[in-house]
Amino acid sequence: MTVTTEDPRLNGVDTATLFATLDAVKGQPEIAKFQFRASNRWLTGTHSRSSFSGFFGATQEMEHQRVTVVDSDHPAVLVGGDEGPTPVEYLLHAIAACLTAGIANVAAARGVELTRLTSTVEGDIDLLGILGLGGGSVRNGYEQIRVTFHIEGDADAETLRGIVEQSRNRSAVFDALTNPTPVAIDVVTG
Image (tube, rainbow, N blue to C red; front, top):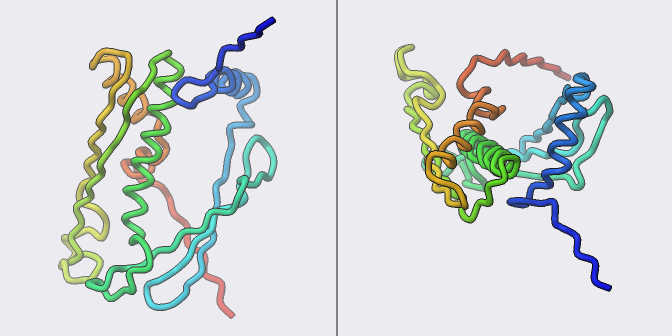
């Protein structure tokens, strides 16, 4: 006797778990409160190392399956050792990764199988702001960020564009980049 079980995953997304999670949050909204954390240590010059491990979610402290460690530095042209991407380059990764995860989830929820999903992200920045040479008229951060997706799947172009749009509307990183977010900085010395 052969038993065939249907894989609940579409685009690598466990849609049964996705919908179960949505139902759980609808029934108990307090489990949707999360706090993500990173710790950073200066190494030398402009080189620092961040690690990501613990976070709070679903009303409890949790740990990622493994600690993720990333380095950040400036390229030599910006007086760094080029030991890793610059901090602003991580923002480009963050927006691409957040939108891509959302697209995979939304497509799976709509029953659309994706066969290709890539993106390129460009950010324009004028260093006159960071260097304090902009006379107060040049911002320190990106002037503009452009994300281009190449997406293919078993749906028409309008549906695929709609999936990307829904991902944009639900993206935490897109929201953080396009809406002012209060940032508190505490300093502990000694």
